[in-house]
Amino acid sequence: MSVEQFATIDRERTQRTGFPEVIFCPGKTDEQIAAIAVELAAHAPVVMATRATPSSFQAVHAQLPQAVYYREARIIGWEKTPLPKVGMAAVVSAGTSDGPIAEEASITLQLMGNNVTCIRDVGIAGLHRVLKHCDVLRTAHVIVAVAGMDGALPAVIAGLTDKPVIATPTSIGYGASFQGLAALLAMLNACPGGVAVVNIDNGFGAACIASRINHLACRGDNDPQA
Image (cartoon, rainbow, N blue to C red; front, side):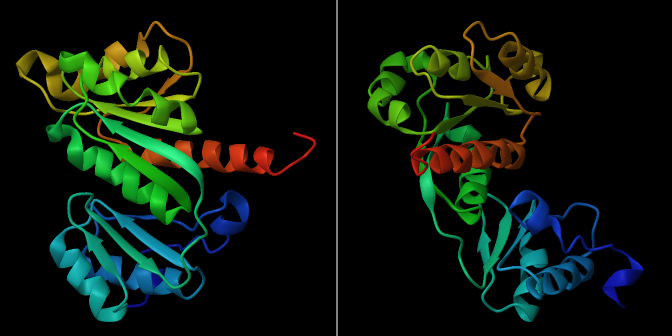
């Protein structure tokens, strides 16, 4: 089956946005995912597929042997020419249970050409845990803060640094968390300025925003007129 029978590949997305089209795997067959990946690989230095299963990876790997599966992040990555890493983006997670979404953000940022530092399991139940990382947070150009439960971590971080914070709610929590809705609403109502919010469990979307901020910051760093 030709890829044109089920997909319209956006071959010019790199020129418009700085990064190739990314494959969202749910709803696609393994064969479709592999066919799209091969087509993208013919035109782009990096191919990425999100929310991928091990069977999807096996299908892609059979066609693109250099492909790598990042199991916790559920991302397939293929790099013919890895993008140069610039700047610094921090990914901070409140709890170990938030790890998969934080890892999705981290791997996405790396594939998009960003230096990344990860700070794990520093939720506000032990406030001292995030406080000891203030120097790192203040050095990064942008911070992705991932949290479920009460969703308070991004507001705390935004009160400690002048860096933009991308708040990322997760579906982790007990019944009244409503699969992340409580964390989402808490983040939307964050008191400190400088907090932007993405959808529940959207580590990929948070990373896309953070990558653009980091790259813009690096352009400014290298521009004597900035």
